[in-house]
Length: 298
Image 1 (spheres, rainbow, N blue to C red):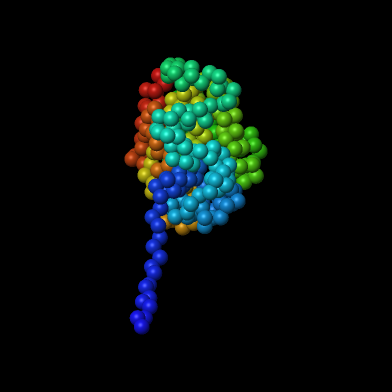
Image 2: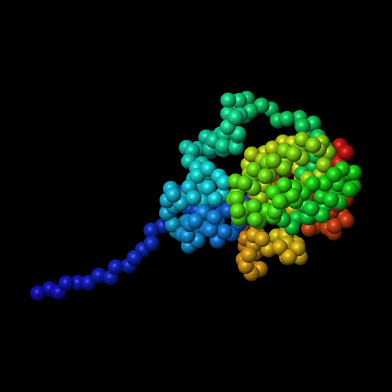
């Protein structure tokens, strides 16, 4: 009698599918662009932090309910968490993205809006907007630049908190990303309507609000204030504000680099760029003033 042979079975984990990896990358990038931690997103979306980590790493298979919850928490359409927004190719994806950013009331004029030529420089008047991550020096340099040019300075974050009557952290906790997006749009519209000449510092996360960011770039001369990641982190630490980079220094640096990577393509749409870590404050103000005068003619 021949005995039965036993075979050892080894469990082999199936490789992640490209679409799953892409969804994970999109979720992670959307979270990083808004500057929130995985735990914060899990809480606001009422999903499992562990499951969210699996999705972001490409090891989990996202459900429609999960994507809907994440999208709602991030104030975006669920299709934006799909590769190419669920479209068949990049051209369709680009067109669909433009449609999603338009106010529904403007949809009848969609074709004219897409085909219209870029507005003249006069549409930007003498407004100068400073964009970039926290720690780039937008507030301190913005005030100094405004003084050099003899025009007012506005900090959009401060204006939002004044309009809301509380901190942005509380606004996000109680009302969510959608409410913050509405305040960003309203504050920008108010400044734009009242000021033809001003220096304006906008929060780094404004790139996540595509419609507002498009409006910012179209109605003001934009300068991206850049700095080395180490400089960003040092300045934030000196301010005593680790939000949203909770944890130890290594984790904070990793979070900051992820945020910068997620936002860089949007920041790069600015009219000009200036490295604020390459020289001291006085020299940076001089370079920034020269850049602003060249853009605006002031």
